[in-house]
Image (cartoon, rainbow, N blue to C red; front, top):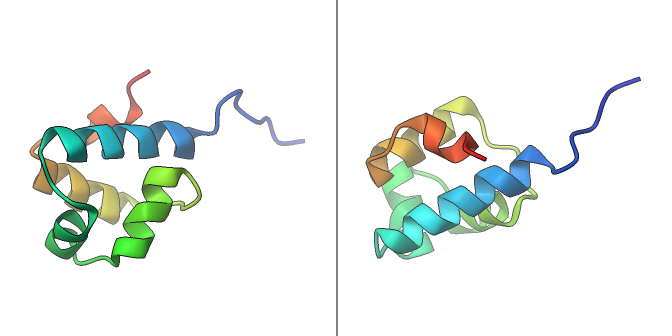
Length: 74
């Protein structure tokens, strides 16, 4: 039996990505283009429905000028 966290980690990560993107005054399109991903995929990440790879998270962190751990803070 697999344990399920109380809050889906994807929701938490997506919320951090959205907050950091808006704080950086970037549109979804600009951030997605900078990370070489589709805007719709970024939207799904921010909405907590996508399961991004570590490479995508690294690209997002680099573009947003934060450490990757920022996406996992509680």
